[in-house]
Each structure stands twice: as structure tokens, then as C-alpha cells.
Amino acid sequence: MMLIMPLVLTAILGSALKGVMGGEPVKMNLGVYTADTHELTAGFIQNVLKSSELKEAIELKTAASENELKNWLKDEKIGAGLFIPDEWGKQLQDGESAEATVYAANGKDIEAAFAKQLADAYAKSAQTIAISTKLAVSNLAAEAMAQQQPFDAEATARQFVQDMKGTATEADFVKDVPVGKKSVSSMQYYAAAMAAMFLLFNAMVAGKSFHIEKATETLSRMMAAPLSARTVLAGKFLGTLFFAICQFAIFMTATHYFLGVNWGDNLLQTLAIAFAFSFAVSGLGMVVASLTRDEKMADVAGNMGVQVFAILGGSMLPLTVFPAILKKISLVTPNSWALTSFTNIMGGADWNSLFIPITVLIGMGILAGAAGTWGLRAKY
Image (cartoon, rainbow, N blue to C red; front, top):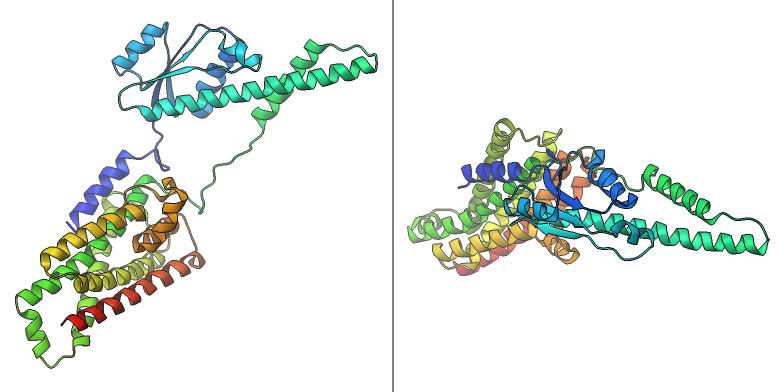
């Protein structure tokens, strides 16, 4: 479980979600039907749905009728269908509200939502241009009339629309730039996520092993030896730390050679975060041992704790999809600090950005280790 399972999950999740996080693009099958011949409708299909920017993301099929579009959906030949009604383009030109209908195949809600976003964004842009044109032309007409000058409203409106379209098309208002020097693929993200998640299981293993040694009288024999309780507990802490570091080293090597995961250009940075996170996990192992009564309780509590930490720390879902409140809560989990640091290293982060995570993780390990040691010494 500690070595093979994280490799299997990394391969499955990284492959299934490539295209979502910087891997190969995901192709969406989208169907469209419209009987509207207005230039705005034709412009939406030609300049948006068939644009070069969306060519890698959308495979577009044009239906001959609305029934054919629905049959494609029923046979799952397309993931979503977009029906544009008559007068849609004219309504947009007049600045009126116009709605297109989006149909979704079973389990293809993402495709439908994407198609709806495209149609809504285009409609709002067209309405804004239409309303702005009417307002500007009416003001210019009033000014020309006051000055008793000739004014061609139709030609002015046409030129105004062309200028606005040209400005919107040529300008780059938003750029997609990764935070680091390089973007992180889904395989890289889930390699870091599974490493952070499965290293947490060492806390459960440490807690269970303490109770196993107590049940088999191994702990009693160690306490009867010429050793202090502090030495015995320090041995448990260091044993967990050593196993966690070995587990990470094996996992990192396997993912690099078998799954092609690039852990970053600076191996020392990755190992520093791995050591700091393993230190925090070792401290948590002492807490699990001190708060549980037996092996079964440590197993249940440890598993529940790992699952909660994994969800809050981003091992299940990327932290970027979390609402603001959950992002703040995730800061109390050590795996969120480790996961973010690993992905930052993969993206080319420098040492300055790793100082705080390393300090926080070491601090968590010290506090948890001290609390667990105090609890165990008080109990035994």
C-alpha cells in the first residue's frame, strides 16, 4: 500500500486528467444547428466555434435539423448540442436579450457548460456593441443636428461597429502565464499529491506500531532496558522519519523513470521539502499514538485523519478549485504545504519561496512531536 498504491493512483489520475492541467488538450465533441442566417450568428459559428484558438479543444459538427442534433445526443455522437433559434442574430443586433439552447448528453455537463459560456459571452459582447453603437450614433446625430451639419447615421453606425470589433479582436486583454518558469502537468501534480497523501500514512503506521509493541510486550522490555523513555520515544520518531524518507525516495525514482515525472531542476530543493514534510509526519505519528488506546483505534483514527487531510490539502482535487475559506483551512494541513512546494519546485521556484514552507513543516513536526511525547510519557 505504501509503495505500489501511490504509483498506481498517480498513473490513473495523471493520465485521466491530462489536458486539464497543462497536458495534451481534451477534445470536446460539440454539435450545432441553426436556421438563422444573420451575420452575427454566422460570425459566432465561424469566428468563435471554428476559430483557430478553439480548434484543438472543439470538434464541431453542424446538424441539418434540430432533430438530427437531438439524435446525435441520444446516440452520444456528441457531448453537447447548441441550438440557435431564428432571429437570434437580429435580437443581438438590436441589443435585445437572446438565448440559445444547450443540450447535454449523459455525463457531459462540462461540455454543455463550456458551450453555454461561449454563447453567453458572444451574446453579451454583441449586445454591448449594439447598445454602445446606438447611444454613440444618437449623440453624434444630435450634435450634427444642433450644428446643422449632414449626418449619415447608417454609415456611422457601420463604421463604429467595425472599429469596436477590430479593437476587441486585436487586443490581448488577458494572458495565460504560469506562476513559475514552467507549467505543471496533471501527471506532475498528482505525483506530488500522492506523495503528500501516502507519506501521511506513516503517522498511522507509527501509531499502530507503538500499540503493537505494547501488546507484544516489546515496549515493556525496552522500558526495562537501561534506556530512558525519551530515548525510546526518540527512536520511534526517527524510525518513522527514516521510513518516510525512504518511501519518498523510492516513489520519486519510480515516477521519474516509469511515468516520466519531472520533479524539478533542483533535486536538493525537492529533498529538503521531503525531509521537512517527513519530519512533520513523524511528529503526527507521536500524536496518533498518544491519542489512541489500541491498534484498531489507531488504524481507524489514522485512516480518517489521512482522508480529511488529503481532501483539505489538495491531494484529491487541486487547491485552485477550492473556495477561499477552504484554501485558508488547508493551511493547517502539512500535506498542503508539501504539495504546493513540490509543484512550485516543478515550476522552477527558487529557494526564497521555500523558506516559509520548510519552516512551517519543521515547526509542525516539533509541536506535534512535543505534544505526542508529553502524552505518551504521561500515559506510560
